[in-house]
Length: 147
Ligand code: DQA
Image (cartoon, rainbow, N blue to C red):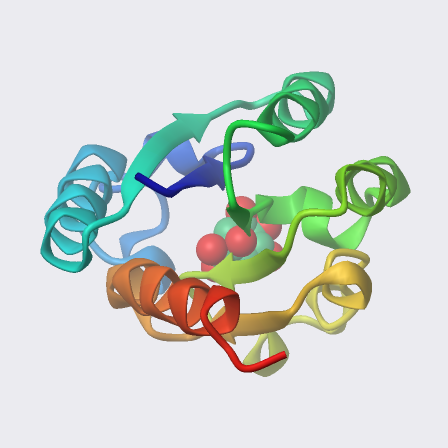
């Protein structure tokens, strides 16, 4: 069975209590459950991970090569700063979708820049936790597209 890596970056382990006005009350465990349900429904495997450090995220991206067909990445604040994460995605040559709970374009100017978007197939943001199952669907539709 094909499998996708769903990778979450810094501070996302605090979802549920972290700025609920921005990110809602859904916890990361709730999101993982949503992803598992969606993955089962559409017949794809998933690995769901969260890391606070940039190096651990890079290692997870490297590890995806040969194991996963695509990467769904909510890189948190590293989205806006990390050339290293962008390079890691380019290096493994796996399709990636950039994902955010909040609409980063409606927020502070420093969140409008994304290094991840440059190497991503597409970006989903602003739909809260519902963005995760949407990203799974979007990745499968990308993988199954006509060449
Ligand atoms: C976020 C948006 C980022 O700007 C922020 O630093 C996060 C969460 C989101 O999911 O909305 O940590 O990636």
